[in-house]
Length: 221
Figure 1 (cartoon, rainbow, N blue to C red):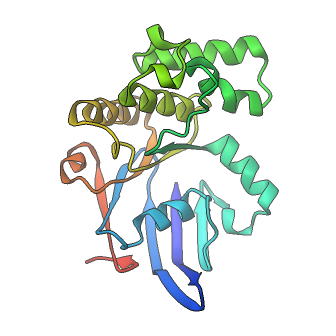
Figure 2 (cartoon, rainbow, N blue to C red):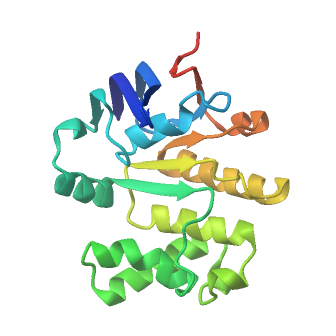
Protein backbone atom coordinates (compact mmCIF):
# COMPACT_ATOMS: atom_id res chain seq x y z
CA UNK A 1 0.00 0.00 0.00
CA UNK A 2 2.85 2.42 0.86
CA UNK A 3 6.45 2.27 -0.30
CA UNK A 4 8.92 4.96 0.74
CA UNK A 5 12.30 4.96 -0.97
CA UNK A 6 15.29 6.76 0.56
CA UNK A 7 13.26 9.70 1.92
CA UNK A 8 15.31 12.70 2.96
CA UNK A 9 13.94 15.97 4.32
CA UNK A 10 16.05 19.03 5.05
CA UNK A 11 14.74 22.22 6.65
CA UNK A 12 16.43 25.60 6.60
CA UNK A 13 16.57 27.09 10.11
CA UNK A 14 17.89 30.59 9.51
CA UNK A 15 21.13 29.89 7.67
CA UNK A 16 21.53 26.38 9.06
CA UNK A 17 20.32 23.26 7.28
CA UNK A 18 18.71 20.67 9.56
CA UNK A 19 18.34 17.17 8.15
CA UNK A 20 15.17 15.80 9.74
CA UNK A 21 15.15 12.60 7.66
CA UNK A 22 18.36 11.03 6.43
CA UNK A 23 17.27 8.41 3.93
CA UNK A 24 14.32 6.43 5.32
CA UNK A 25 12.95 3.48 3.32
CA UNK A 26 9.95 1.46 4.45
CA UNK A 27 6.95 -0.54 3.27
CA UNK A 28 3.45 -0.69 4.76
CA UNK A 29 1.05 -3.38 3.60
CA UNK A 30 -2.67 -3.03 2.95
CA UNK A 31 -4.65 -3.55 6.15
CA UNK A 32 -1.72 -2.99 8.51
CA UNK A 33 -2.03 -0.90 11.67
CA UNK A 34 1.45 0.56 12.04
CA UNK A 35 2.90 2.82 14.73
CA UNK A 36 5.82 5.16 14.08
CA UNK A 37 7.72 5.85 17.29
CA UNK A 38 10.87 7.59 18.43
CA UNK A 39 12.11 10.21 20.84
CA UNK A 40 11.42 13.91 20.35
CA UNK A 41 13.26 15.11 17.26
CA UNK A 42 13.61 11.61 15.79
CA UNK A 43 11.67 12.59 12.66
CA UNK A 44 8.48 10.61 13.25
CA UNK A 45 5.99 13.42 12.53
CA UNK A 46 8.11 14.61 9.60
CA UNK A 47 7.96 11.08 8.20
CA UNK A 48 4.20 10.88 8.68
CA UNK A 49 3.82 14.17 6.79
CA UNK A 50 5.85 12.76 3.88
CA UNK A 51 3.80 9.55 3.74
CA UNK A 52 0.54 11.50 4.01
CA UNK A 53 1.58 13.95 1.25
CA UNK A 54 1.26 16.88 3.67
CA UNK A 55 4.87 17.82 2.94
CA UNK A 56 7.32 17.19 0.10
CA UNK A 57 10.56 15.30 0.67
CA UNK A 58 13.84 16.92 -0.34
CA UNK A 59 14.64 13.70 -2.20
CA UNK A 60 13.31 10.17 -2.51
CA UNK A 61 10.06 8.66 -3.73
CA UNK A 62 6.74 7.73 -2.14
CA UNK A 63 4.44 5.27 -3.89
CA UNK A 64 0.90 4.83 -2.57
CA UNK A 65 -1.32 2.12 -4.05
CA UNK A 66 0.84 1.98 -7.20
CA UNK A 67 0.80 5.78 -7.67
CA UNK A 68 4.13 7.61 -7.46
CA UNK A 69 2.80 10.60 -5.53
CA UNK A 70 6.23 12.27 -5.66
CA UNK A 71 5.57 13.00 -9.34
CA UNK A 72 2.12 14.55 -8.88
CA UNK A 73 1.49 18.27 -9.29
CA UNK A 74 0.19 20.25 -6.30
CA UNK A 75 -3.35 20.11 -7.71
CA UNK A 76 -3.08 16.36 -8.30
CA UNK A 77 -1.81 15.85 -4.74
CA UNK A 78 -4.83 17.71 -3.34
CA UNK A 79 -7.18 15.49 -5.36
CA UNK A 80 -5.29 12.34 -4.38
CA UNK A 81 -5.46 13.24 -0.67
CA UNK A 82 -9.16 14.01 -0.88
CA UNK A 83 -10.00 10.73 -2.62
CA UNK A 84 -7.63 8.31 -0.93
CA UNK A 85 -6.39 9.51 2.45
CA UNK A 86 -7.84 10.45 5.84
CA UNK A 87 -6.19 12.41 8.65
CA UNK A 88 -6.58 12.55 12.42
CA UNK A 89 -4.63 15.21 14.33
CA UNK A 90 -3.89 15.63 18.02
CA UNK A 91 -5.74 18.97 18.16
CA UNK A 92 -8.86 17.49 16.46
CA UNK A 93 -8.83 20.22 13.73
CA UNK A 94 -12.62 20.59 13.80
CA UNK A 95 -14.34 23.72 12.50
CA UNK A 96 -15.79 25.29 15.68
CA UNK A 97 -18.85 26.83 14.01
CA UNK A 98 -20.01 23.53 12.46
CA UNK A 99 -21.82 20.71 14.23
CA UNK A 100 -20.32 17.23 14.48
CA UNK A 101 -22.54 16.15 11.58
CA UNK A 102 -21.43 19.07 9.41
CA UNK A 103 -17.75 18.60 10.25
CA UNK A 104 -17.97 14.95 9.22
CA UNK A 105 -19.69 15.44 5.88
CA UNK A 106 -17.40 18.28 4.81
CA UNK A 107 -15.00 15.97 2.88
CA UNK A 108 -17.96 14.47 1.02
CA UNK A 109 -19.21 17.95 0.13
CA UNK A 110 -15.77 18.73 -1.29
CA UNK A 111 -16.01 15.56 -3.37
CA UNK A 112 -19.36 16.66 -4.80
CA UNK A 113 -21.71 14.17 -3.14
CA UNK A 114 -25.45 15.04 -3.22
CA UNK A 115 -26.66 16.57 0.04
CA UNK A 116 -28.94 13.69 0.97
CA UNK A 117 -26.24 11.09 0.44
CA UNK A 118 -23.51 12.96 2.30
CA UNK A 119 -25.81 13.56 5.28
CA UNK A 120 -26.72 9.87 5.37
CA UNK A 121 -23.07 8.77 5.21
CA UNK A 122 -22.12 11.22 7.99
CA UNK A 123 -24.97 9.95 10.15
CA UNK A 124 -23.93 6.33 9.67
CA UNK A 125 -20.26 6.89 10.53
CA UNK A 126 -21.12 8.99 13.61
CA UNK A 127 -23.35 6.15 14.79
CA UNK A 128 -20.45 3.75 14.18
CA UNK A 129 -18.17 5.78 16.48
CA UNK A 130 -20.85 6.03 19.16
CA UNK A 131 -21.85 9.67 18.71
CA UNK A 132 -25.39 9.49 17.35
CA UNK A 133 -26.67 11.50 20.33
CA UNK A 134 -24.05 14.26 19.86
CA UNK A 135 -24.50 14.62 16.12
CA UNK A 136 -25.89 18.15 16.18
CA UNK A 137 -23.61 19.53 18.89
CA UNK A 138 -20.80 21.98 18.28
CA UNK A 139 -17.22 20.96 19.18
CA UNK A 140 -17.32 23.30 22.20
CA UNK A 141 -20.22 21.26 23.55
CA UNK A 142 -18.27 18.00 23.48
CA UNK A 143 -15.45 16.48 25.52
CA UNK A 144 -11.98 16.02 24.07
CA UNK A 145 -12.60 12.32 23.54
CA UNK A 146 -15.87 13.03 21.73
CA UNK A 147 -14.20 15.64 19.52
CA UNK A 148 -11.49 13.16 18.58
CA UNK A 149 -14.14 10.59 17.67
CA UNK A 150 -15.73 13.21 15.41
CA UNK A 151 -12.31 13.72 13.85
CA UNK A 152 -12.01 9.96 13.27
CA UNK A 153 -15.51 9.84 11.75
CA UNK A 154 -14.55 12.67 9.40
CA UNK A 155 -11.37 10.82 8.41
CA UNK A 156 -13.31 7.61 7.68
CA UNK A 157 -16.50 8.93 6.07
CA UNK A 158 -15.18 8.86 2.49
CA UNK A 159 -13.74 5.36 2.95
CA UNK A 160 -10.08 6.28 2.45
CA UNK A 161 -7.44 3.70 1.64
CA UNK A 162 -5.19 4.94 4.45
CA UNK A 163 -5.69 6.81 7.73
CA UNK A 164 -2.78 8.91 9.04
CA UNK A 165 -2.99 9.78 12.73
CA UNK A 166 -0.50 12.14 14.38
CA UNK A 167 -0.48 11.67 18.17
CA UNK A 168 -4.30 11.22 18.17
CA UNK A 169 -4.42 10.67 21.95
CA UNK A 170 -2.00 13.41 23.00
CA UNK A 171 -4.69 15.61 24.55
CA UNK A 172 -6.85 12.83 25.99
CA UNK A 173 -6.98 11.04 29.32
CA UNK A 174 -6.35 7.30 29.46
CA UNK A 175 -10.04 6.35 29.22
CA UNK A 176 -10.68 8.48 26.13
CA UNK A 177 -7.38 7.31 24.64
CA UNK A 178 -8.44 3.69 24.95
CA UNK A 179 -11.77 4.47 23.29
CA UNK A 180 -9.96 6.11 20.36
CA UNK A 181 -7.46 3.26 19.98
CA UNK A 182 -10.20 0.65 20.19
CA UNK A 183 -12.04 2.48 17.39
CA UNK A 184 -8.92 2.38 15.24
CA UNK A 185 -8.43 -1.29 16.06
CA UNK A 186 -12.06 -2.16 15.24
CA UNK A 187 -11.97 -0.44 11.85
CA UNK A 188 -8.57 -1.97 11.13
CA UNK A 189 -9.78 -5.50 11.85
CA UNK A 190 -13.31 -5.33 10.44
CA UNK A 191 -12.61 -3.27 7.32
CA UNK A 192 -8.91 -4.01 6.73
CA UNK A 193 -8.36 -0.27 7.15
CA UNK A 194 -4.71 0.69 6.74
CA UNK A 195 -3.66 2.98 9.60
CA UNK A 196 -0.35 4.74 10.20
CA UNK A 197 -0.10 6.37 13.64
CA UNK A 198 2.59 8.41 15.34
CA UNK A 199 2.63 7.94 19.10
CA UNK A 200 4.97 8.38 22.06
CA UNK A 201 3.03 6.19 24.51
CA UNK A 202 4.40 2.66 24.88
CA UNK A 203 1.05 1.14 25.90
CA UNK A 204 -0.52 2.32 22.63
CA UNK A 205 1.64 -0.27 20.87
CA UNK A 206 -0.57 -3.05 22.25
CA UNK A 207 -3.13 -2.08 19.59
CA UNK A 208 -0.89 -2.12 16.50
CA UNK A 209 0.44 -4.83 14.20
CA UNK A 210 3.93 -3.43 13.76
CA UNK A 211 6.20 -0.72 15.14
CA UNK A 212 8.57 1.41 13.04
CA UNK A 213 11.20 3.14 15.18
CA UNK A 214 13.08 6.24 14.04
CA UNK A 215 16.20 7.63 15.66
CA UNK A 216 17.95 10.82 14.56
CA UNK A 217 16.09 10.81 11.22
CA UNK A 218 16.93 7.20 10.38
CA UNK A 219 15.40 3.78 10.85
CA UNK A 220 16.54 2.32 14.17
CA UNK A 221 17.83 -1.24 14.27
